[in-house]
Image 1: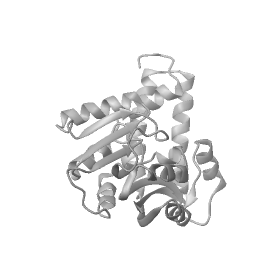
Image 2: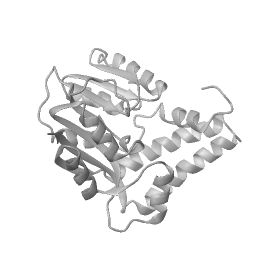
Image 3: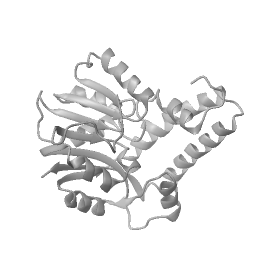
Length: 253
């Protein structure tokens, strides 16, 4: 991406490709979620949907048996995942592929675990878990994070931001009911702590944006892109008691 006239998408990819995470989260949260699952085995098949560069994909491979397929729409992210997997001697168990969460390449009833962090809201929580259910074996697990309302008060400014980003926030109890309606036994949910947003995502993202500001000095698209990202950070700082990413864990029945 050597262009001096980058698009918003170019900047999004260039910002995130060097980050461990493409959204809020942590290794501790992953391990907390894994604690709710029954043990898998070397024959288990796992899919990480909307995997980005695969920071969590690699973590899963280091803590679970079986084979993992990471799927993302951005080829640059998948290339990075495959490079990292190979460098960590995980290439025989971790494979990254370019694809859509709305058109999965797997056989029906073939997966033991579907994992997805910070991605399902791009297609809609209900739409995602309903469609993905067909690809899980009976008793297979689904683990997703989705931005959710944490309080009865739902500030309009927050609703507008997420709506403009293509996401629709719902409260935790409604999302749990949706899981049950879509054919899952609800197992657990928990909210990501603030540091998963700030220390693990916003701070490294801001550092990456500052580097791009130097590279694309004076570029209007860069200025707009940076402003949008910083607005998100400011919004979370002011209203984080009202919303956050929530892990939802269920089992196909």
